[in-house]
Image (cartoon, rainbow, N blue to C red; front, side, top):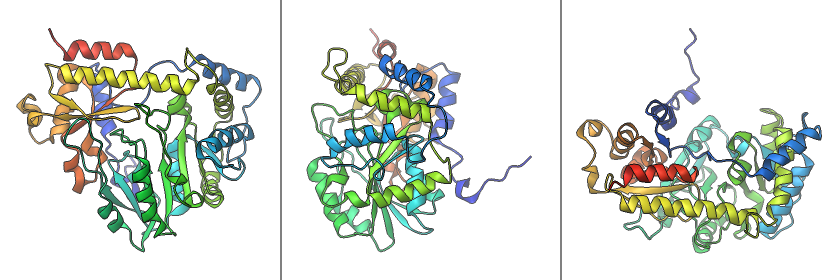
Length: 412
């Protein structure tokens, strides 16, 4: 049997998902681990897919995206970024934001180039950087001391991370897993650092841009100063329309950044799913219209997640089974909680040889049939201590799932 694997992949054979997804299935747990919605997407999105298929939009297409979709993206994001976006040169469609990120890193990095990543960070970032020949340099956010404050960035440490070897800055807002939405002041401080390094490219992962809580305003790093030309901002139809299996995402940004990214796309998957692109284009047109009593679809979907955040906070605050303090979630698909009392409520057999967050998540899955994700996996090994007291709960499940969770965790 052939058992060899490339050196670039050898260190990435284990993921947290290879442990907790099978564990959740084995114990028939309510899976609040992975960030995919388990509820139906809107009917207008399904209708759009049927219309695209019936219009014979089923063959290979332009590698950077079908004209109908890139034109809609340019319209929507032109308004968002307050600039005219050329659909033919400043937009690229990919198989989800994940492929967009890989196409971007493959098109930017040479062996030995350094990439600054702000932790906690989505676990796909580091493997993709390494596969592309880059070296990740990780700077951690600092956790809050209470449940009403945001995680903070040490700007001195961030600035010190930049060197002549730095080729790329990778950034995520709202942040997965912690739900931090960067303020205008924070983005401007980051922008001032980047202005000192004009040869550093920027990738901003903004797939949760439409899930912003408490009337906050989402801002893009690409809109700070003169960063647009060397930025790629990533978005996801899967997250927006609850169709993660469609694997349709895109990047908008400077023409040279997009052009180089499309070269990588051309020699990997060549083009993305044509019929899904047609469906997303039609859905973007409809999303601006009144929906379910809200002025548009964007307001409605944001309210769904905000309500689930409040429900999950209520459960954690009132649980007499676990002791987890919910932290501030400003946006995104997740709520992070802090394990209290050093996890003294977790049985000893789960604690042996495990960090606190892993022990908690294994115990919660096996004994209480609820799966969460340990947060230390979103940090570098040297910074993992920032995450070992925290666990992540997904907000993208049916309301009925949270009813079940409440019955398990709040006992009369």
